[in-house]
Length: 156
Image 1 (cartoon, rainbow, N blue to C red):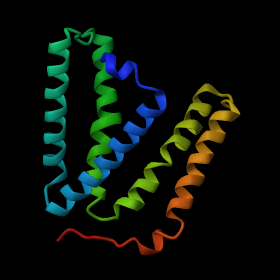
Image 2: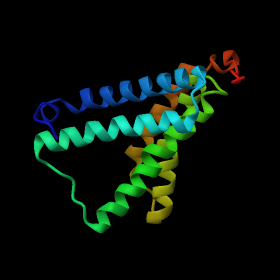
Image 3: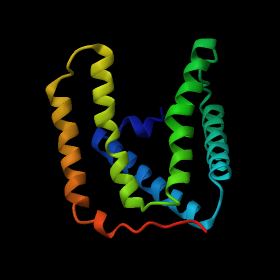
Image 4: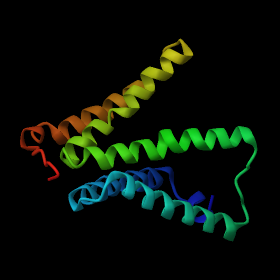
């Protein structure tokens, strides 16, 4: 991790992640409106991300481990964490508004909480659930009148 990132407060990093995710939804919508196929958009996104990652690894001298168990993790995380969601976003955002899609994506921590509780066969700490519910309440307030105004955009 770069030194300047280590020195940033966690709140700044969380805000940066939120801004990047928000920008990615908007850019995905522009791609869908432009008529670029989801597969082509995903290809270019992954190519640029790979080139940036390789450049950073080369300049810092820190290569990721390439043992078989790590490669399985990289493959799974790449498909479930990057490629799958991006492909879905590029596909869906041609049909629905960015605000509606963003509101649905904010439900992911609630699903993660529920799945983790099921896998671990125990209830997770209440403060985690409370934090997730506060975030859910926040997105509900932000969109409570907005869904009536969501217009479906169909690619022609």
